[in-house]
Length: 389
Picture 1 (cartoon, rainbow, N blue to C red):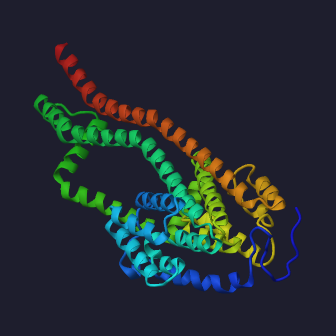
Picture 2: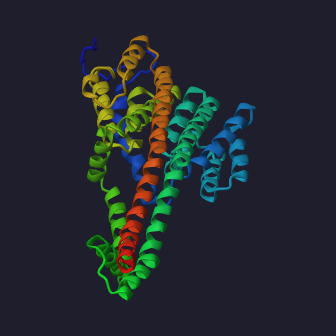
């Protein structure tokens, strides 16, 4: 593998030039961008579905030759999301008052997202605003399609899980107390396992508040833990290392990473800025570490393929694709194509795993019900047989 000499300048290519200004100014601008997110402005990020509708409409209007200001006004009038409509109206007012589209969009980053605003700014500078708007809408559409696929695959396992919980509640609350009375009326002691089940049922019914408080407290603790970066990083690394789930998650994460980089490069954003923007949008610690390695390599004058040996989370064949893309100068198209492939492959594997989990849940549910029924009915049959003799 050949590497470029480290001359102290950022890695650059004719297609994706990186200047000293990218290195000196970008960290500060990213900090300024992130400091304006909803924690400080009181506004939340608009939903991807709302953004998809707006950007698809803007792209169509601009493609037909309508001025961007008029397109914004029309999109504002038809937008169903009040917060996003206010955002579009503010951009429209800024443009009509003489501000550039880039400056107006930059003030709305907390609602639109920094990848969207950076892409629009690059599109305006390159004169490719119409195609950039279409690409933004296409990216949102792909992300929503992936989310819909995963949600649909999760539906049946979730229904089975709720059914299991409902069956357990009925057994504990209604069935076991009746059998307890039957044993008491017959004056016999049930087997030890049956006694434990009856004691557990009595405890739950007698301490409903404590049990519910414990369950909600545990759920709250899990939710709080999910907000802690260190815990999320450890859980993410464990999931990625899982022999069953890891492959699907790695493919989906790397596919999304490649797609983001490819879209940003296609929108005219420099390689270094695209890497930095992507790092801020990736929630998986393992992926962030990989992007940080790329960022350092680009800043120090090396290519993306310099540290491939350190990137253990790349799917099979991804390293060869990156090497060929960098040598041929077709990094943008290869990243987009490979990203779509890996994300689709990861989604298919995840759907397959969820499909396989359905019979497992059914078996566990049936086993639980069977154990409870057997532990209660068999002793009663023994008692009846003994009394008949």
